[in-house]
Amino acid sequence: MKIRIIVSYVPRYRGGHRWHFAPPVTAIHLAALVPKGHEVEVVHEQVREVPMDRDVDLVAITFFSGFARRAYEVADAYRRLGVRVVLGGPHASYWTDEALEHADAVAIGEADAVWPTIIDDAARGQLARIYRGTPHSLAGLPAPRYELLESQFVVRRVAQATRGCPFSCSFCAVPDLNPGFRVRPVDDVVRDIEASHFDHWWQDKVVWFWDDNLLAKRKWARELLDAMTPLRKWWLTQASIDIVKDDELMKRMERSGCIGIFLGIESLDAGDLTQVGKRQNKAAEYADAIRRLHDRGVCVMAGFMAGFDDQDPERIVRTAEGLNAIGVDVPFLSILTPLRGTPLYDRFLADGRLLEDRSWDHYNGYNVAFRPARMPPTRLLSAHRELWSRAFSPGAVAQRLSRGARQLSAGGLMLSTAMNGFYGLKRLEGNAPAEAASGGPRIAHPSPGGLLRVAHSAIPSAIETAAV
Ligand code: B12
Ligand code: SF4
Image 1 (cartoon, rainbow, N blue to C red):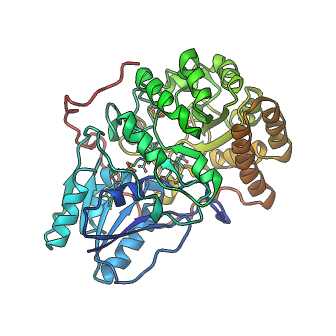
Image 2: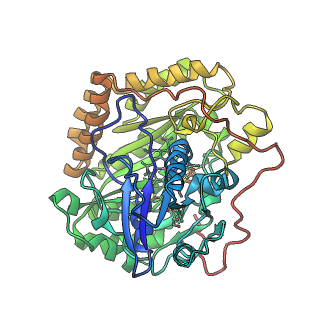
């Protein structure tokens, strides 16, 4: 069979982008799991148009909630051409009935083990409607098919070494989607990092781990970093802020070439953090934690959210100065989004706070899908845009870069310059985050009490959970 794996995407900025930092790992991972004897192609809609032909036997589409409208458009178009479509990923896992309206089959949850079955069934013309994946051991996963990636991605070596996160922040679906904390064997990860040779030196040099919390299990993390040290890579990932308290780990991070850590800081206010269950963050310790990462030359990327219950618009906008004051190198500024599979979604649904006139485009992290506690939705949106504009003003960017020039390693500074340059230029061009269009198909939220989580009845005992 000829299989096409598509990553659906809707530009989140008014003018889109001309290039992208890195691809997701999902499509090239699914491509690697395709059994021998089939032909496979990947299409990242971020960088190229989806080919609309019938010269393919099976189309597999992966997408986040914010891109669901587009994924369904593509799925419907293929089905009109007579091509069979399978949908999967975080959105389809929670909105299975909705996804089934646009697909021949839907894969729920982690699909590593069921994806080859789906392909076999499709080849025999016997697709079932629903395939349910279960969380499993990560030993023996194949290396992603990097050679299938489009050339437009600046960094190409994306990897995943762990799944899950030991924390449980109320807005995050990870604890439900990827329960427990599972690690891959270090040798498998090293094999993926060594695999393939790319066109440009930085593509060989940089490894971008798309993990939820790569360093959560300290003993394993130390082994991984020791094994990575001789490879002389530059690597970056997401981690929780408690890593700075582990000096042995921090030493190894520096030695093994860590150039950037993404921290979910979310808010500068201790009350907001308590409300969303972000127990690992201590607002009063942010500046010190970031200083410790800078002491190792590491660029600190940090996520912030606007829309917590105690925030007013002025406090949201003031985050622009606050984030520079604590030493953040690259801010990522989003709006709180109630995603199914999270306690936040359950609470907003029960309290009648989900806005009913919103479509999936409002769930892309840059739009408002709920009733904020202290302001109208339009004011939350405008406060977020004001924050974005101030945080990427030429003065704020220059302040971060000049500090970075003194504090960061060569790799850390390159990362900070590339990212601040990217967002700073957008700001100069007036290419701000786009407002989702009103109208479009309504979302059929369940009635409160009828909530569905991905049915992970139990984590198999062979799977380790982290003790943090
Ligand atoms: C890496 C990552 C990113 C990266 C890369 C983004 C990208 N486009 O992939 C970055 C940092 C850019 C990112 C950004 C965002 N992300 Co993100 N991200 C992740 C993360 C941590 C890992 C995803 C991953 O690569 N996993 C590894 C691969 C191998 O696994 P997978 O994708 O889950 O696929 C498996 C199964 O789902 C299944 N599967 C998936 N698709 C399909 C399709 C078919 C046909 C089949 C059969 C199976 C299948 O099989 C795979 C193997 O088991 C997840 C958390 C998580 N644990 O899933 C959040 C997550 C996916 N992100 C999320 C969100 C909300 C966002 C943002 C909107 C956040 C924001 N506020 O801005 C943005 C969107 C930006 C964008 N441009 O896309 C949510 C999505 C929830 C939802 N319902 O949609 C998640 C779940 C985290 C959360 N907050 O709960 N993200
Ligand atoms: S620490 Fe990050 S990945 Fe873990 S639950 Fe919280 S937001 Fe999700």
